[in-house]
Image (cartoon, rainbow, N blue to C red; front, side, top):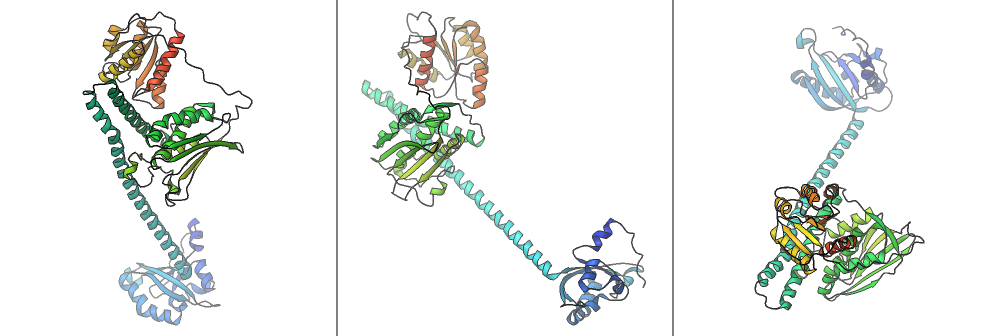
Length: 528
């Protein structure tokens, strides 16, 4: 049988000749018809000395030739192919080369009788190294997949735990609010009414903080937090945070010691910096047993201000310490810590501190050893030589004409009563249509809900401005995202408040309106 016609030379020939494996074409008796350069280099024989002159089996060791005759050749004839057969290839110089052979039989000429065999041989050592690497890669991939599955299970478990905690935390303030509402119908003295009102106010504030934290987590994870940067004295930030957290600290019977000197200034968002310190104080109050001690101190060095919150509470377990700032991470809950929170406060602290270019760290000697949280922030580069601003007292109010529009009748009526107690005259409407029907041209301020049943608060503000052109417009809504504030500002609202309303802030806005306007006050407050 003569060799087949030599194939036309092409770019693929170079790939064939220099392939990293040995390639052979033989006839049915094993005579080599073609061999690439790689195979010839293995046996150290020129192609001319192989092609048509030598058989594949003649290049094998004695054991290889026996195996070829008894197993390899019969299998190739019967099956048409053999896979991963280990043989030893003789070389003219040096020890035999272990190889792995794959072969397939192809018809040629008169059917299978003149079949040709295509051999692909690989250096066994290289093959086994590649096989070992492939197995290692497969094992690593399997391990990563198992790890990913475990993480999914842990995330699912954290989600379930979070939902359970959320239900628990929401029920905590709702229970006393519900009970207080029932007691209101039976209260007989001003003292009882005041005590009930204090309970409702505290629990409503707690609910508001829960919702705010949830919204802030959403904003942080989506990168929607925008800072309104100004130069601030840390003492003012600390004072505001202490004022926010004082009720909880007092309720828990803690002693709070504050050592923060004036004159240490940073550049940041006042609301967010107060939130950072307040969250750390809340955390210390919740995780310190009744009657504990909390220290809040600050100093500056190396261009940074450091704020530290220390407590003598339950401490932080060494296993939890590296994860204390992770989302939904918190220590084991106990009945004593019924207000343990949702495990998002410290995660918010870390994110907000990072937005200010700072860092936060936690330290604890272990269980029952207390803890210390340290926030480091860059000192202000704008405050050098600038005197520290002192608060300007708000002038005394004069009564204003205020319109309140909210489709929640209870919310509108209660707000009107609060403003009425301060001497303001109020008009109340529960739809845009009724508001337009009763609006007073001399209205000083309009407090409008955005989600009204007939018109949006944005549209209503434009319509009301035609009737009350000098009024100040305040949006009061459950929507507090950044784009909601942009929309209200574009609609002409001077202020954007989020429900439940911060009464003190609203009173401050009305105080500013009263100072700015000089219209005569209404004779008698009224509510419709």
